[in-house]
Image 1: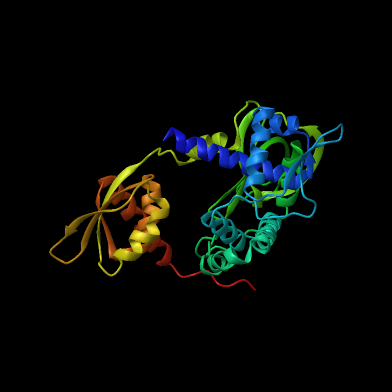
Image 2 (image 1 turned 135 degrees about the vertical axis):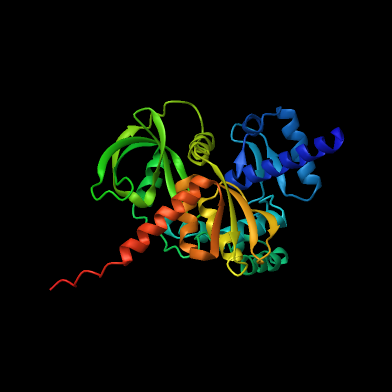
Amino acid sequence: MFLGHSRDVRSDRLLATLLLLQTHGRMPAPEIARRLEVSTRTVQRDVEALSSAGVPVYCERGRRGGVALLEGYRTDVTGMTDDELRALVALGASADGGALGTALASASRKLLAAVPDARREGVDRARRRLLVEHQGWRRAPEDLPALPALDAALVADERVRIRYATGDAAVATWRTVDPYGLVSKAGTWYLVAAHRGRPKMYRVGRVREVAATGAPARRPDGRDLGAVWAELRDRLEAPTDEVDVRVRVDPEWAPTLRRVAMAVMAGPWRHEGTDADGREVLVAPFRSLLAARAGLLGYGDAVEVLAPEALRDEMAAAAARVVALYSVPSPPPPD
């Protein structure tokens, strides 16, 4: 096992050496050794191994010498397996919109063009046979005019000022933030940034304007984007007033209920059986009584809440208010 690992390490190092030479043309052996964190003698042995394998690599002595590839020599040295190439090309072909998605799609096309003919057919087939849809059902794509400016600030690692509308607020206000990065979750883009020393998430679709400050970003801690996002996400998804709800459902409506109500649920449905009338009895945790009422009331008499009693009372009171609302004549239309 150890010997196999050593072989893999050497293969990776030979590939890294070839990539360096193909990029730079000629490099001093000590510089290659420094970048790969090995000894100069190891570099010399690797050069001999590459040469024995048919790679036109040679060493030149003298002040301007070093390790070099024969001029004009190019090869496919991406080091990617067919699975890795297929995954990257398919991801680029399925990129969502915006400047970042356009750049990813362009990079995918360039990568496909650089793949040798013998490998291109399988990779191109994956691009045509795999589609990743980022947008949720019945959701219009968000307009994201602020995304390119935010991406530019991240590349420059700069503090920015954003004019942001909280929720459905009509007025957007300015705030200065120190960005950690951008996150795309289920087709929605978020900016993760520190505001007044506290990490927060901002929906990019609500950023009305971005102004560069020219000042370096000053994040309050050394954590990376993944760690901060995980904390914010877990905080948002943490159950607060979770409640188990038991319902009796018309079998024709059960598939729709199982699918649609998931948006306000804290866990999956559990099937408890079928009653004498042929109705399914289901149990599931909802995020709160209010969420359960909102998710179940629209089904009318197709869904009956059996427990808890507090939710039955909420449903009855809400239904009574709806009946009262529609029991009076509608107001006349405006002139």
